[in-house]
Structure formats: C-alpha cells, structure tokens
Length: 240
Image 1: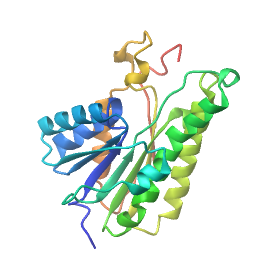
Image 2: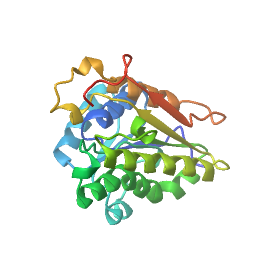
Image 3: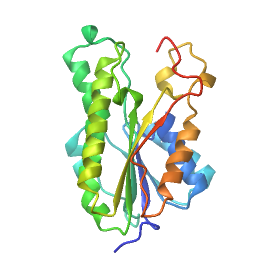
Image 4: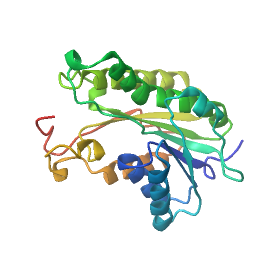
C-alpha cells in the first residue's frame, strides 16, 4: 500500500477564511504537500504564498468550482505531486435569509455549495484513498447541521444534508482504512461575517479550528473523531 505519511492534504475553499487557516496550519505544523482548491485563482495564489512563508515545501493550486461535477472529475494532480491522503471539505457559503424570502435558485445554490462540493471531491478521490494504508476525510459541517434556524433555513437544510452524507459515508467506509470526521462549527470568524457588526473576538478562532484538524490527522489508525461540536466560549452571538 501507499503511505498516508507521505500523502498530500487537499483543502477546498482554500482561497480565504477558514480554508486558508487550515492550509497555513498544515504548512506550519506538518511536512505534508498542500493542494489548494477554490474558484478564485488570485486568492489561491495569496494562500499559496502564505503557506510557503509558513514552511510548506510543496504547494499547488487548482482553480475549480467543486460544485460542478465535470470540473472535479477532470481535474488533474500536478506532476510529481503526491495524491491526497487527507481531504478537508471546507468549501461552503452562508445565506442569511428566511425560507420565505429564499428563491429556489438560492436554495439550490446552498445545496450545491455546501453539499455537492464535498460529494464531488470525495467521489473523485475515493479510489485513490483506498490505496493508502490510512486516509482521512474531514467535512466541515455546522451547528446548523444539528437544528433548524429560522433566519437561515436553506443553509441549515444544506448543512443537515452534509452531516447526513458524512454519517452515511462513515458507516460505508468503516471496514476500510479511511476515517471520516464531521466538524460542526458554531460561529467562526470568516469573510461571511464581514458585513456584520459582530466583534471577531466573540467568534471561534479559525486558527483553533485548523489546529484541531491537524491534530485529528495525526491520530493513529485505531482512532477516529466521528463528530465534534465547536462553539464560541460565550455561546451564540446575536443577532445571528
């Protein structure tokens, strides 16, 4: 079998926010090659530079809309770059809007971005992961995966679907060497909050989230974090 130790880490939604923090933390805390995937090439280049400054020896970017199955199926790993052994499905988008005001197009976009980005990426790499002696899939879910939200119903529905997918994938892969983990995030500092007047200091630190994911990736093959809830210390910050 190929070695998990020598595999790369693929991070979706790596152009900014939480995904960028995950990439930087893997760069500073591990020797893994880093593969960055998102739609915005310019921002991916910025993340790549930050990863290099943090200590990464190999960093590659793949501009791609992971919600589009054909784009994911045809993406190619750069030459002489290790296949991913860790996949962090971080790509997502938060819509702050009640269901009564949400158009069908907006609803579909929430499902495409928050669910099918993960489904498409896993489908693209699952056979490669099975060839490793160990592999890890981390799906960034939400506390909105666990209960409804009247002010962001489409987002909650999409994140419920992602958690259901994660739980089913975990069951399906139990007899393999692939661990599957869901991180249910409470309010975490990211560009989603740029238009609000909430103090970033009241929200989860994206660097803390990233450090936890790196720690999960270092567990032995005997152990898996199936699900984890991470909340701000003082609870949900109003009005969101």
